[in-house]
Length: 112
Image (tube, rainbow, N blue to C red):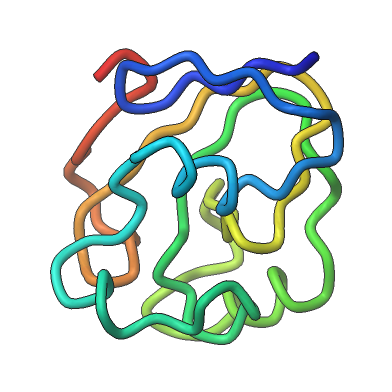
């Protein structure tokens, strides 16, 4: 079973689980500020669940690529939308600041 390391928690999950779902089910603070209330609930249109993911995950789908190609995101960053990402193996997740998680300051790391 793959393990997700995020905000100091190690979470086991079934392969091909949705990253957003796993993080939220385990009390991880996926959204910054007002995005906790105003987000698309996982359909991939808002971009507020952007995180840095290290490890084995699905290839970015068209929704992930399309949303990250629009400001304030950039297709050249190494962020992914958690709602559009399937966990395939062990992963480490980092969250950055900014409403969309696109900032340069780390909010939390895999270790906490």
